[in-house]
Length: 130
Image (cartoon, rainbow, N blue to C red; front, top):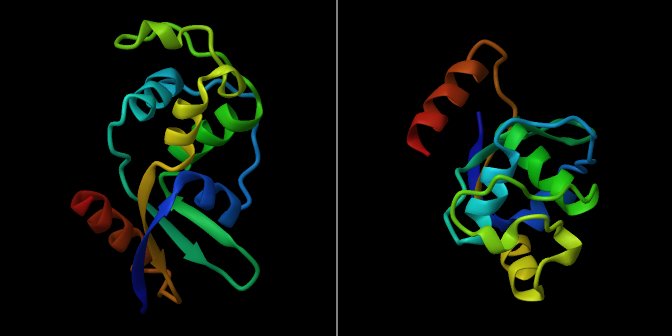
């Protein structure tokens, strides 16, 4: 078994895992983007390297929300803290805020070859630690 970690930017993780936007609304998406815009830290994610690709095992919903915001242009609404971000999409945000989102650090735990029986236990333990 092999577990390693790196701190990467959100933009790097989206590219690494070849995440693509989808149109479905995800509950809490506006709150997550707002929290990144105001500088709150991101929870870690867990990624597994398979023979052909990287797979997000834990944190996929968070990464999908960020990918959707990057590429699909959904507008922020019903924000609690920074009302100036209301009705903004990634492209219309101030350059400083776009840069902050793209460069937000996130700790990525990488799982190498693991036994299928212990993978759920590892994921559960690592989520408690993060």
